[in-house]
Image 1 (cartoon, one colour):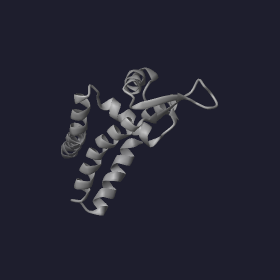
Image 2 (cartoon, rainbow, N blue to C red; image 1 turned 45 degrees about the vertical axis):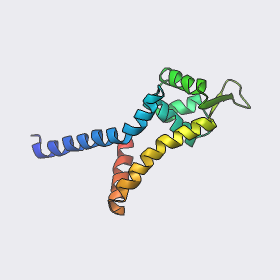
Image 3 (cartoon, rainbow, N blue to C red; image 1 turned 90 degrees about the vertical axis):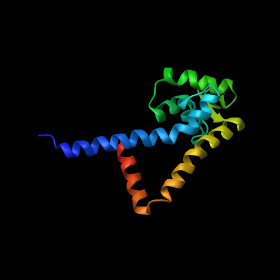
Image 4 (cartoon, rainbow, N blue to C red; image 1 turned 120 degrees about the vertical axis):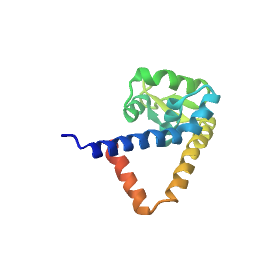
Length: 142
């Protein structure tokens, strides 16, 4: 028999995840929308910024998305001069991705909004609460 109390607790966890995530992306999404971009653009800027010089294939692997899903938003970022795509020095078939100065500034602005939210929230909980949250997120990632 299904434990109804546990099911309700798990539903509440789902709702917390949903509404927490929605709040985390609200302001960055608004800024992106005002520039004709979306969440995928932010994700690309973020991961390229933290992995300067990675290839398109490596970015696909990090994000676990297809080349088709990556192609259009990446091309938009390159066209807007937010991302640079240069041939690899040893293998010209490989494109290496880096943020331009404009791209780095936008990525930092978007991620700063989210870092500030984490800073504010983590200041309201104990260190052990933050560690527990990080542990749960790490386990969900697996």
